[in-house]
Length: 106
Image 1 (cartoon, one colour):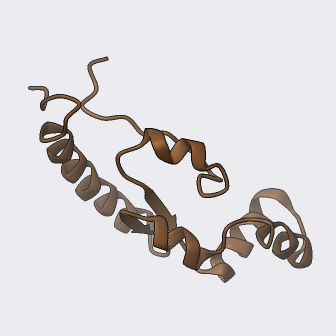
Image 2: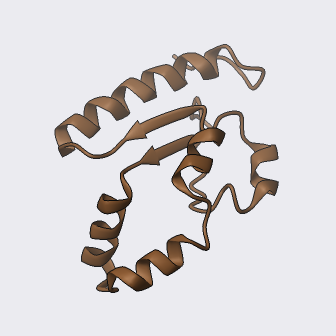
C-alpha cells in the first residue's frame, strides 16, 4: 500500500488479454531471438529446436513490441541494465504521481 506503483509480471501477457485491461502501461523486456534461445538453454538445458517450438506458440517479438508502452533492452551488461531500470523507475514514479491512481509518495 505504500508503493507509488506496482508491477505485474505476466510472461504471456499478450496471450492473456484479460490482464491488459488491468494495467496502465505494458513494459516489454526485449532481447534478440538468439539471446532468448541462449538464455533458455542455459537456464533449462532444452535444445534449440524445442525452444523454438515453444517460442512459436507464443506471441512473437514484433507483436510484443507493438503492445509495448515501454521497452527495456536487455542485451548489455548488468550495469547497463541497472541504469536502464533506474531510469524507468524514475519515469514510473513520475507517471504514478500524475496518474488517476494517486500521487507521489514522499
